[in-house]
Structure formats: structure tokens, C-alpha cells
Length: 173
Image (cartoon, rainbow, N blue to C red; front, side):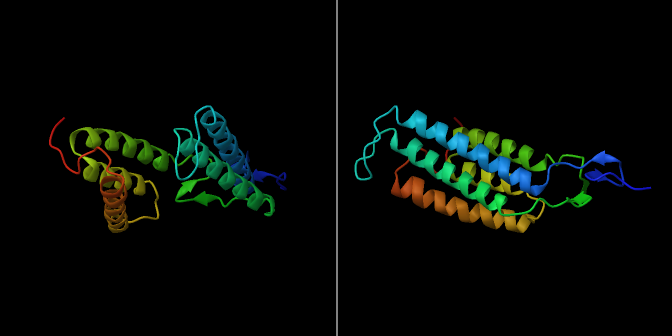
């Protein structure tokens, strides 16, 4: 029996969007979000690099986001749509893998909790560690090492260089 093009022979269900479409649409979404941030940021005084205004950061970040989205979409256009493998990270293709999204949301919630009751260092460690666990390719050791490195960078950049008004450690609120 022949299968129709675009169907998964094992399940007779249509295949999900290829990597080409995911990258293309993901890039387009980043462009839209980036341009929206630029549009919102220019409503404030932008200033210049030496004397930044309140709109400088959203405009710069939005422009970088839109540029990244453009690069992703352009690189996706260079690829030919390819069929997906039957299994992705140990899950059947039709079943969504929500581990990454759940870990990112939990990481943000942990950052809010530890930022309020623990300080910059525990909050940074928690958000990076929990978010890193969302990638099935990361081991616990890699997640800990990444968290320690990012905690060090956060202390140097935000606490020491920028003098962020968030204590390194605090016990309670």
C-alpha cells in the first residue's frame, strides 16, 4: 500500500511542520516582536551611546532581536524543507515536548522568589540552573557549571560594575 506524500507511514497522520517552517516562522515572530519593541522604545527619549535615554535599551534590544530574527529566517530560506524523523528526543513526533517551556517558566518564578528573599546570587543561580535543565542534552554537572559561571558574570556585571540595588545575599524579605 502506498502512502500519500506528507503522511507519517507509522501513524497515517500528517507530519508536523518541518524544521524549515519552524525556523522561518520563528524568525518572523522575532522580527515582529523586535520591531514592536523598537516602536515602543522610540516613544521615549533614546539619546546616544554616551548619554542614553530611557528608550535606548528597548530600541537597541528590539533592533538586535529583529536582526536575529532576520538572520534566522534568511538561513531557513536557504534550506530545503526536510522530512522530520519519527522520534525527537525520545518522544513520538506528534507529542509536544513541554519540558523546556516548563523549566523556563519555573526558572523565572524561582528568580522572582529568590530575588525577593535570597538576593542576586541565589536568584541568578536558580534561574540558570532550572532553565538549563529544560534542555535534555544538558547533564546536572553542566547545569551547575553553567549556573556558577553565569552567577559570577551577574555579580561582576550587575552588582559590581552597574551597582544594581539588589543585595548579593539577603535572608527573608
